[in-house]
Length: 132
Ligand SMILES: Nc1nc2c([nH]c(=O)n2[C@H]2C[C@H](O)[C@@H](COP(=O)(O)OP(=O)(O)OP(=O)(O)O)O2)c(=O)[nH]1
Ligand SMILES: [Mg+2]
Image (cartoon, rainbow, N blue to C red; front, side, top):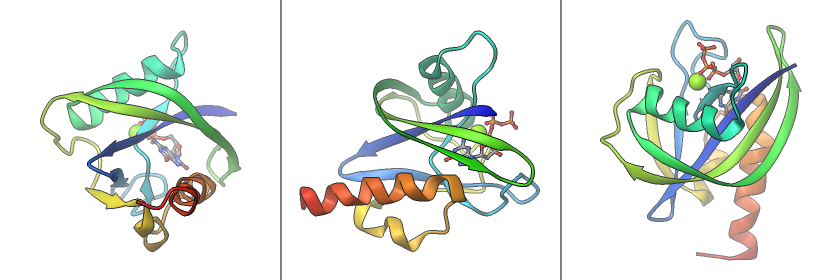
């Protein structure tokens, strides 16, 4: 099983989501950005590397949020989601077709990769517990 990291990055009450490119595995699906953990890497190191590679931004990785396991046709993954904090850099789209900052209430409106759906639900629940 491949371990994959995903960033929950919030700025001004909105969360970052990114759309996978045409031709990629899970093309056109929305996701919390990140990627596969490489040998010898911690999840935190992986996530800071991926955010720099994919968007050209520096983030600090904070608390673990939750994980999901999902078996696709092409790969079985454990997706590890972490809260992250934006530090610096201008966002550029190096690896995705699109990116968006969305309110938590809008998480239901996007077609996420299957492994992300429980994570998106859990994030949205926070809204019910703590309305903005
Ligand atoms: N980054 C990321 N990948 C996800 C999410 N949900 C999900 O099912 N995946 C799947 C898609 C891929 O099959 C797998 C690995 O993600 P990835 O394609 O971003 O990996 P990577 O950045 O290391 O890219 P590559 O070197 O494999 O091209 O995890 C998610 O929220 N974020
Ligand atoms: Mg990636």
